[in-house]
Length: 471
Image 1 (spheres, helix red, strand yellow):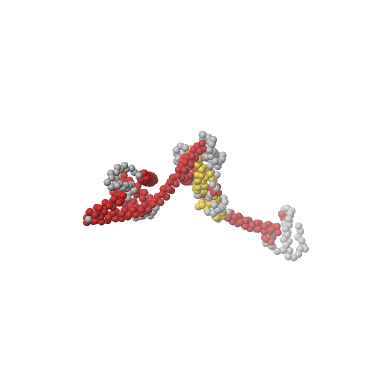
Image 2: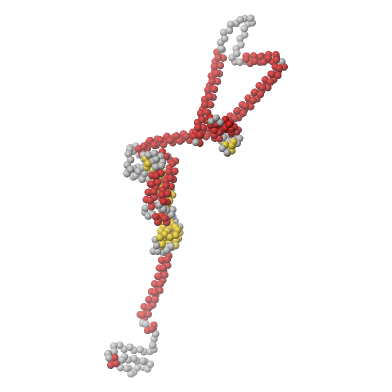
């Protein structure tokens, strides 16, 4: 290549070494003109665009990484709904206490997890054991068949229980349970087998508790509540031993039956007992009413003291009998009495008060009557002492008038000096009247004796029943 002789001033021209200097022909000749520029100024537009794009992408990646980090950390914020509890897990291990409904902060996945557990099992719906111990397994709600029932029992087809008196019985119950310790329940039991475990424990408790009941006690309506409580306690104790974290909130035995082949006989017995119970209730009510009508509030203390008085008399303890009799008198008078270390002052009312009032009136009347007779006797005695002859004549005259005024006295007049022959016979009307009076007196006496006997029998019966209840 030859040097350009006509180059403008200020323009440097560089020449490649000649072929003779390098030993080969020149393949490229670079030529620089003007001043020398920096590295950035020397980059071409394509390289500059690539650098800008890389810079923007780097910033976008940083923003995305920050957003992902925030989202990752924010995934640890979770919520627990109403009726649920939460259990926080860290690498699969429970940590901390149960989380109550609301927002919960935990470790994000995959390090942490929040397990939500419903507090009420099955949504709080009632569950039933209605086929395991019941004859009709296909339709547990069907009414028992009263005729044509099988005389034998196939354990594979008919569920049953054995009572303490070696009888067969059938039973249905309902139950509810909840996860009282949800953490322990999740650790111990699979959710798929939880209800089966509760049912198995209940079956065991039912068999155990019914085996301690008689068939009569099992069929009584009043004993079902007690049986339900005992079954729940027995099953709950087993669940606690297993560390299940479950709690039986309700067990209700709502149906019990005897074997269907004997159902009519058992129902007849139940009806008879029900009638007996009603009669007993009516008798107790009548007894209470009679006692109230007789002595009011003082009836029961009086019965107690009278029974003790009879025992003291039968035991030959006169001092104790006298003391009890004084207590009875004080109770009848309405005065306070100490019985077994307690002061008793009941209100006396009813028939007793009327009888006591009548007795008091009779006492006053007899006392005044006897006092009048005594005063008359004393006056007659004083008169006799002063003048015995007139006193005797007056007394005979008065006695004769009283005798002649009797209904049975008949007066017959005869002429003086005659010697009549008397063939005495009772007047028919007077005899009939006397007979009627005698019969009336006998009837009144017999009625009084019957009433007294009935009162004594009733008193002895009530006293004996009271002793039996006290015993």
